[in-house]
Image 1 (cartoon, helix red, strand yellow):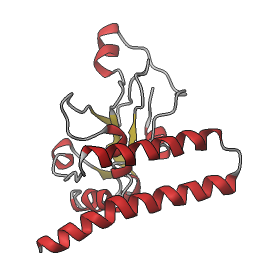
Image 2 (cartoon, rainbow, N blue to C red; image 1 turned 180 degrees about the horizontal axis):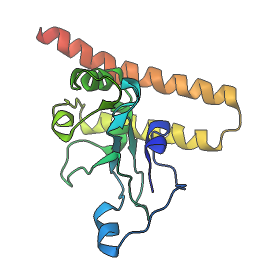
Image 3 (cartoon, helix red, strand yellow; image 1 turned 180 degrees about the vertical axis):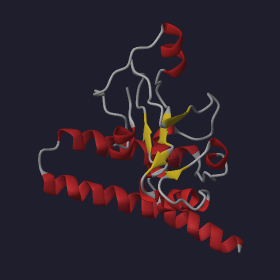
Image 4 (cartoon, rainbow, N blue to C red; image 1 turned 30 degrees about the vertical axis):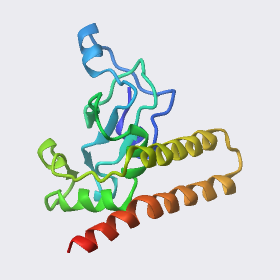
Length: 178
């Protein structure tokens, strides 16, 4: 079963999931994780960890936990799930989340209605593919990487890539519209 900690810690859902749950066949099919699914945690103790996202790179013989929401892109969706892995780790997305949650006292929470208010910005499909495939390839390499210094550099590379090709162009477009 995919849980909140997994979603917070990973850009792409890991191959092995640690927790399990017993379900009927009908429940399993209803909540099964499929390639392209976006898992979002809907509650957290901090705003920074609210609405963190994790992408399923392939079909899983697993389901998602109760504190998560699953977004399943439609077959004709103009947005690539791997691009979404990059976008949902951008500064622009974090601003959208912060702008769409109510003031919280003890726990941050995001409802389906508020989640639906979040704007998703995306480039043409060719650029989505390049960005998504790059992020996925780097994350796959990091799973095998034993050098912590190299892994830190790769994390920095990903942050800069997202900033340069997602955050900056969107901010530029928004400033031109104002």
